[in-house]
Length: 330
Image 1: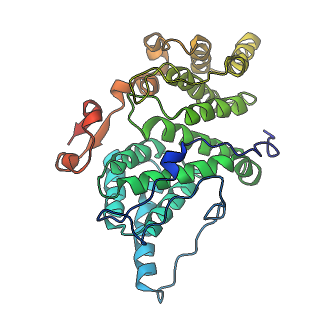
Image 2: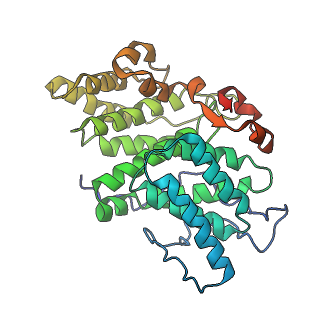
Image 3: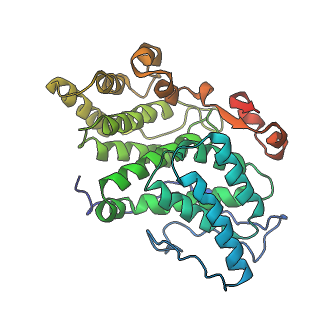
């Protein structure tokens, strides 16, 4: 894939009201300890792909605390682990974070590690959404998350050029998880994020050699179709400017792949068939593909089975009654 020279217009994928909301101290009210989120067209506050050097043992107490807290996050970046373990790691960090620097460091660690291994991307995004519903500090983690998501999206071709295809596709996987799971799953994502999903599908449509590439491409196309027919926060069908010409161009990659008979396995064929069935007006008939793909893959598109496990005693800590039907209290 060779696209490093594109993407110079740096589109905004998150509404300004989310990005520019003033961040408040954990106790409530605005204050000096939390900086206001900067618009994404301003100069980023961090260098792309920068990996901070941990402070020395003789550093300031604040540096030592941050270093110790970040070291505890390493567990969720060491390969696939149980969802509740991820929740406990993130929630402990969240409770101990007492200034904006901790949220920035948390997101930098999450995003740079997702480029290497996105295997825990889905539960991480689910639980970041749960934490964002905390009435004291939730707005801070929400704004910081979207700030980093925007910055990394703007730098997607830099990732592609400097880090390679694997890191780029890992980021796309994480972006898809962020769009799908870091939200109220009963309403459509921000329309800017929906359009970004189509852009990623367009990029990937030129490289459908492996099963993983076909699955990721198909996931993006099907979700784009799904999002454009979902209600928004006002319970109305969102006014998304569906780019049908580009949508059909993206789907043509599936038609071409199938017509050439070059799919290496039956599952790839099923994914591409789901792409062709997507039309931005009604959901894909997923039940026809359950037997061939398996319930886990098909569940990626069924909102009512996007299960989130949560300790029962923590339920009242967050404003999450709107997604109670997809919670499993344990």
